[in-house]
Image 1 (cartoon, rainbow, N blue to C red):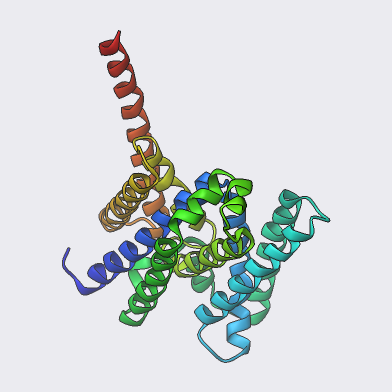
Image 2 (cartoon, rainbow, N blue to C red):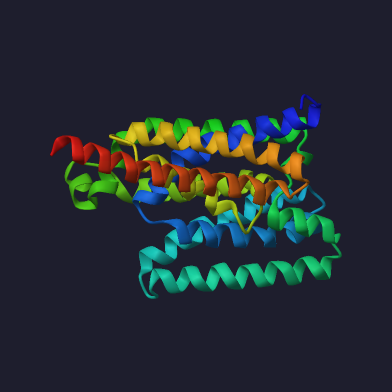
Length: 271
């Protein structure tokens, strides 16, 4: 288990888990899961765009996701169409358009499969650097704006009364989610990327007593899921992306059952 490609996969997965774990707290608190789905599905259109531009498809994916995040922010501000309707149209429409565009561009089937379901075992040194640079940007931005973001999550009106620019922070959250989605695609793929934002954060929430504690627990569950998923993928010869998400789901179920048992025991002792 010390082969170079396994170490690279573990390092890449840990970087993704740290960024997704902290940002995932706000995704869960603000109920932005469907927004993540829309962004991840739109990423498919970046593959043919990157190929047509003669560059790495990953750069095309990053560009498309960033553009879509700002378009969604503008549409939401307009309010002409219900947000869930806009997200539904973009999520499914962009997924279909992306697959058709990839088929027309002649991208190999294996590349489409890895984009949809992830293939973290193929990451290289350059991918790892890219992931950690993006993760550092996300974590630094969240740390610098943590108090304001938490206050805005509690109440938009209260945040405005305290002088917080909620419009700017809303754009910041969307941008950071776009970055995390873009760098997570190699790990878990388009169809499962939102799970890395939701499941670890939801698991950490059950035992957290503060926003900061939830972020730490979310990162811990995410890292454990990555390592367990990679190990399971190698052991049972299963796809790496779904294996990571399966591990996260198993951890969630275990922690959920543990929280119920803990609560019952604690209540009995209090009585």
